[in-house]
Structures are given as C-alpha cells and as structure tokens.
Image (cartoon, rainbow, N blue to C red; front, side):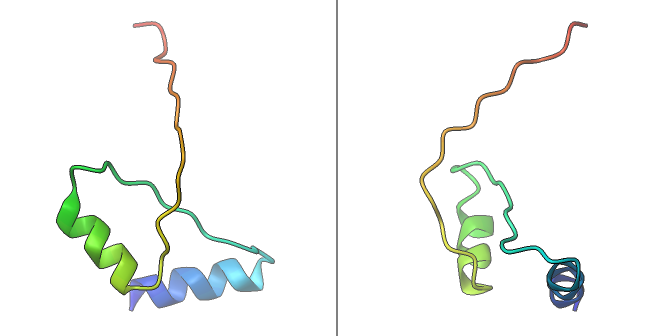
Length: 52
C-alpha cells in the first residue's frame, strides 16, 4: 500500500513524525486519516499567497 511505503521511507530517513494537512470540511477524508492511524491535532496554518 502506498501509505505504508511512504511511512517506511520516512522512518528509514529518520523522520520522527509524518504530518498531512486537510481542510476541516473534508470530513470523509479526515475520518479516513484517523482510521489509518493519524491523530488530529490543533493547528493554525497561515498562508500568504504569492504575488500574481
């Protein structure tokens, strides 16, 4: 499975954690991530859009 391979590579590279982001309104996706073992965490993400 792609997820397992990505996590294996991250572990082998020395990663202590693997983060992903998803908008709160993507409820089904967020449930899937939690079922796969990812834990939701409180975060405030700020983005400054580049000049067009």
